[in-house]
Length: 216
Image (cartoon, one colour):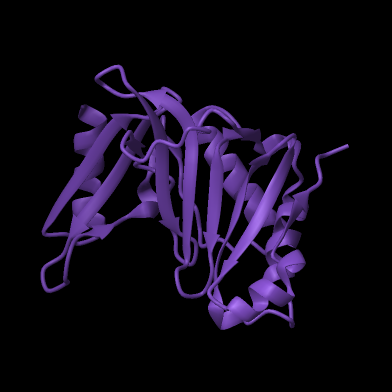
């Protein structure tokens, strides 16, 4: 508690806030996650200070992510593993220009009522963020939630290549692209790109999905 109070006071002074809030909770890995909010007079809403987020006292800040970059995909993989305590993941979806979101379906966990639920979180990839807080989804609980894949079994460069291949494909109407989803299909990691262009769906269906090779 003393550490949280000290952090709140430091943020209040350094960020010139009119009020601050430090939120601490236990994450899915058992690590303590802390987040800091700052309210400034004259500014709309409460500003989340992602750069001050921590897991067990260690920085847990993610810069803006370019999923066409292998190093940024690797940074996401590390942040996910640190937060969830495992590289196992159910699905993640990278939103294109109209969305800019990264939707993550993590592990099946148990909520406070002892019921199964799916740990989910969502961030914007075009701005700094953290992967927490997560929420536990027990209403939209997929039947295949126990089907996961291990991020460590796939090279970040191959995941980035799948995203780059879609985003830079001259055959596809880029303004109609929605997202690219990654999930386990059979024994392989499958990716599938969504579009609102029905012409692309018909002519280039083979270019809207594929597999990420597993590490040798």
